[in-house]
Image 1: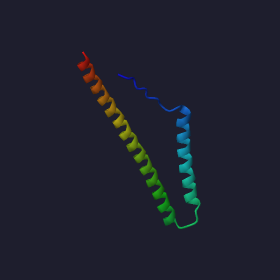
Image 2: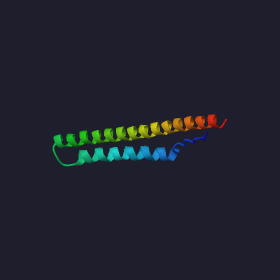
Image 3: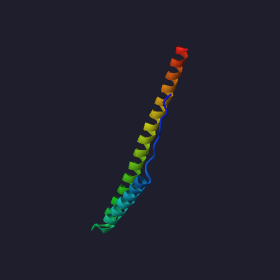
Image 4: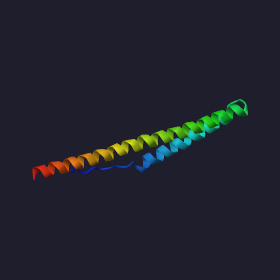
Length: 90
């Protein structure tokens, strides 16, 4: 059976992703508070922004989990196929 290597992200990439996320949240927050308008409008933008962040994180986690489950399923199928082929060749 083949050996599957699971490589992780580099520390630099992890830092970049976290810094970009923090910067985007900060920029959105500053933009909401500096926009001219009523408090109700600013509150609407703030809640909408929080919902968008929540939905994005949830969607990315769900897609990652789906991808990982398919990879595990494929590994199990390959292992079963290899086992059957080895038993038939004996």
